[in-house]
Length: 190
Image 1 (cartoon, rainbow, N blue to C red):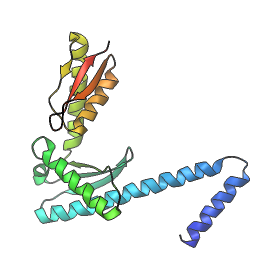
Image 2: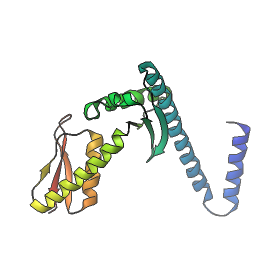
Image 3: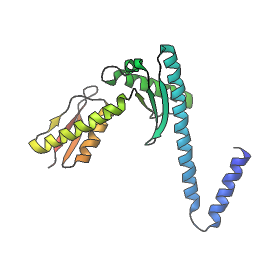
Image 4: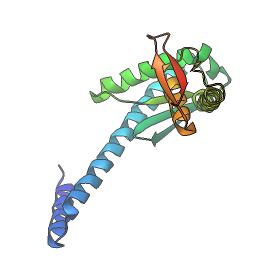
């Protein structure tokens, strides 16, 4: 630890103790959040470098954007006309690429990560479609009083549908089946 950082932490500790309050736990929590955010930014940078090398190998154009959302690094690749090839049918290539990118980050950091990858805006568009699907299935379950079984989905897709159903109220949802045929079932409440 550098002298400056050690000195700063010592000063923060002394200030926290002299105020007669429990500011030390708050300072520790702030440092932990900052450290967590720094780790997520580092994961995003590693993923961005990995994806830049991949795009160069493939000779694809694309702009890489790094962000941190909901406690995970989010990497988006946009801009090139060839990028849809990296999404594949129903996002299957994107899922595989996300796993490879997560592995590259894990190899570099030594720890697991929850990195989210989006290519050509596919995931954000899909999120919107699935939210609408969840709302529609919830309404249909309410109107008909019968369970609505949706087609098989990835864990990412099911999570979005479950969230949309939960927000609708008056219905509940569950997943059934085994991967890769696991699906969401929306039941009327009661």
